[in-house]
Length: 373
Image (tube, rainbow, N blue to C red; front, side, top):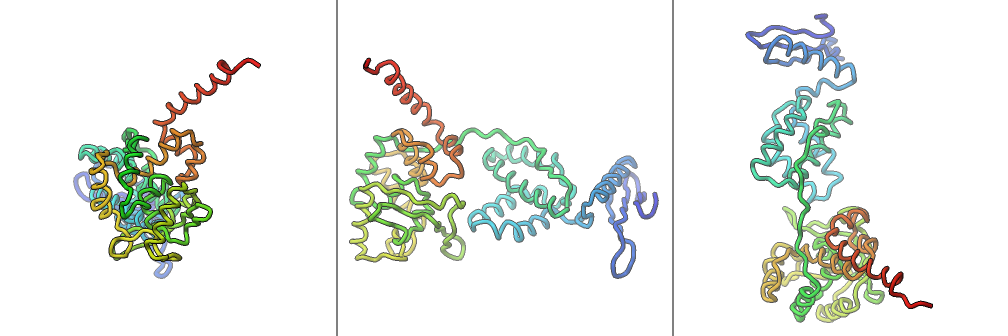
């Protein structure tokens, strides 16, 4: 082979050193070669050389060929993911890659990670009984990382785009029926966190949103709450952050009985308002969700003989009851701070057939049962 193009050098039985010319060192003016040992026949070595030359000619930075996937992911997390993600999301990304990707593919050269490698990884994860939802989430993170590698000219194509994902069954979540919701309202009467539970079940706010509320986020005269931040416990302490997405910043109308409960709480708190938390732990600091669930929410459900739903499911309960009451899905989508109206319809599609029954009856009443003029 011509020296400036590439070389194939025999290194033993079925072992070949493939060398690809990659320009000159700007300081020493010496030629730079990228070396790769290939195990197999001469045809395999020639195929690898042709592939490297083709990628070089199309503009890929061949210096990245020695960079492992682990090294690249370290860089991507620090440079790209960390600045744009909330703390919790960043830790989720980091954890998914550490648990499910790095151990299997991390030592491979970034440029050699193939769709087959990724497909095989997902098959192994399924065999380990990892849920399809977790695999899909892992895939989304890995695909995003490799997409950035294309932008940085480290690879020419994204192997994650060519992978088949496991089928994900529709996620089921627990909600309280209308009758159970009434029982819940009776059960929280007089509870120290009555206002918190009432707000959660009627507004559809996320726990991280209502636990971050300050009194100046509330306009009780107009009966509204402004949602603009979240509060979560991370290693090192409490973290205030922006809402999940820009569309999650919203103003929600409060029901009159919830406004009354909040006014009572102001009286109990001896008028402490302004930039202080609306809901606080018994010792005065922020409420840690996991402890609150175990100490207050679960015992409350058990004493009222209600299903053992998650605290987050009060959000779903608010949405399903509103849909059942005939509230426009568009309005509910805005109240929940969903990314789109279509997403709301997809999440709560189980309620829609009942809504269609009621709608059909109302239309029939207009067309068939209306009195003759």
